[in-house]
Length: 319
Image (cartoon, rainbow, N blue to C red; front, side, top):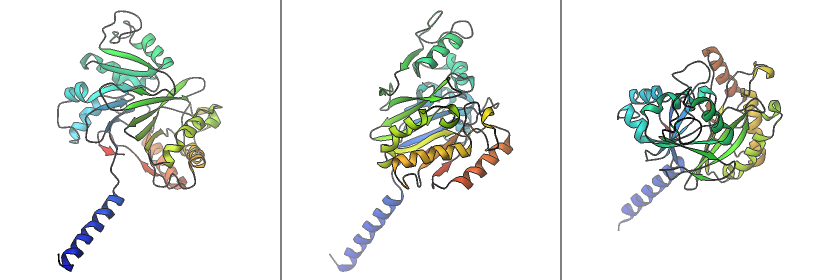
């Protein structure tokens, strides 16, 4: 082998290692079906999450489903029919709490859906069975609760902080309690695949306002995963700009409170542990001027160097 050939081989190896270092392999793919809070019924909280290079999606909340799938098809994210995405790609639903802007898509689309599992904590599941799938407000497409059980959905109650396999996927989920206008409960879902994790939070107020320690307990639980870089991103809401008075937060976050909470997480995970870490901001509430203001305030207050992602309905991204 000539010196020139050796030089070429070394150059190729260096280039490969540089690319590998700059572009770490993604662990999850995300397709947002709905990204807002508030009054836009065609764009309410719902995020499809799957291991990269699979179509085994779990739907994190289900405020908007069909309209979001149609938007994803319009953007060439999916190249099959909306019915096929609904019936074949979505393997189940993780519902953080039973407010309508997080479950209406699940309810309305249930007649067209295929058999799968709906996962929720005890109080959330009780509300869905009692108020929605009760054979009066809506046909009971589940296998529990009042009325005639159509048994399309298996209603699986999650025990808090207990790892549960997600049927028809390689993923597992662990649920943590959140406070959403104390004492009303919401849920955070820690999803694992292989040794990679993603964390999704339903609606939550800050510990300071909610007089709770739920977020601190959650940050304590995930801090080791931040340190080890196994946690690939956190979906967390910011509903209002900083001018919103505490008494009118209604169990939601502002940019100021998000950054306060992330500082708690950094204290637990270690200095600079959140630099470049992906924070996916959810549940932005119209009007547009408020959303613009939230984005400006987060940019100004981002002293931790987190990578803030604003998901776009129907547009795929990776974690």
